[in-house]
Length: 494
Ligand SMILES: Cc1ncc(COP(=O)(O)O)c(C=O)c1O
Image (cartoon, rainbow, N blue to C red; front, side, top):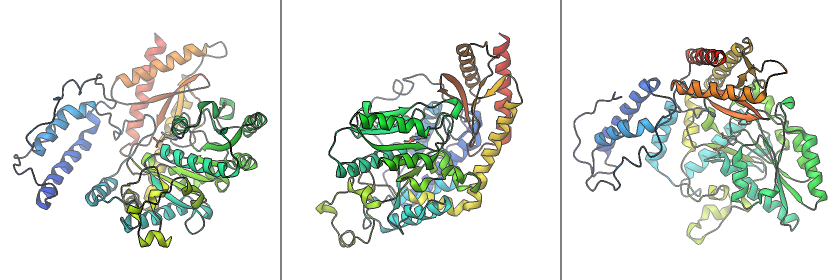
């Protein structure tokens, strides 16, 4: 599909950051992207290319002569776009969305344009101070306790991903525990619904998989982590001479958006002097709406909390906000003080050097995105954005609930609906139901017009419909519903 018309060839290519060329070429890319968004619904949502489609067709060395932007964009259109899964398509219902916005795009232009490397306050004071401002704004918006604020002993940082926040808090928690007790036997607790990036993070920081307890959850408890089950697991470990040190709770689990009861679980963690991290990667954005804030009740008992505006707050990848209650405890295991970076401001201890709050040294000016998004859309616009999706999800859930062919597997908490083909009474074979539901998912995705993904919880195969694309409208939900019914009819008839 070629929808973009390329103007006359530019010849003076070798002028990186020349202002005139910057202006012309940036316009070309903006036009290219505007056309992409105009046509986004014409593309197959989940790319259908075969492995090797690019590696086997692209030249095996770079061009020796410079190439004009027009021809590069032509390549993007012809060779790259077919291999893109269109996460910004309004018919993208897979995983959790990663929704972008015009303001976010403009902010990305600004931050890339400045291309600062704000590892310390001095390396870019505005990058550091704007982050503090934005993290305090968000703290207010989420009604997080004052203990997480810079005005108290806490503070916030922006990471690229939840995985980074897990790694940094695990390092801090381990350091804290090792200051109390010398041991090799530290144990991490979570539920079997916790995102696998926690497992990855524990591997990275060198915790043996044998020391990670994923406590089983059940459908009858809506896949929440049960405080008694946690307590039993901890007590078993303590009896065996192991040392509990880190608990990860989730608000909005990935498979079904379950919410762990934070308050009571934090109490258990406190009893054993453990670090408790609350991961609200997806659902945290919803908690800016007063009607969803109760899902964070008890957060004052946690040591750290993170959520990803890059999932559901009009801010594109990468943007994960992390707050900690004790910033000096948090930075102990991450801080360095090399001669090369010594300066008066850092030595005064009056400034934040964000290099000590993260894995890498260098950092992008990501705050620009969140700051501009909050200013452009305002609190009212952001809440409205979330509520629109929740309303559509509620509508989709109602359609399923009214139809005996389907079962909504868990009550919907936010804007993700989990359903399957309904079992035919007690005698129904669960494996058959799983197989049918899987075939329904494959058949619907096979159309290329929508993209949904699945989860398996307590041996139940569920189709997850995550409603959160920036461009989604009710007609796209209706299209999905029509498709689900049509394909289910065909499957059930056969
Ligand atoms: C609840 C939850 N936690 C963690 C993650 C991993 O996030 P990241 O890719 O930012 O590391 C996800 C990803 O979807 C998630 O849903």
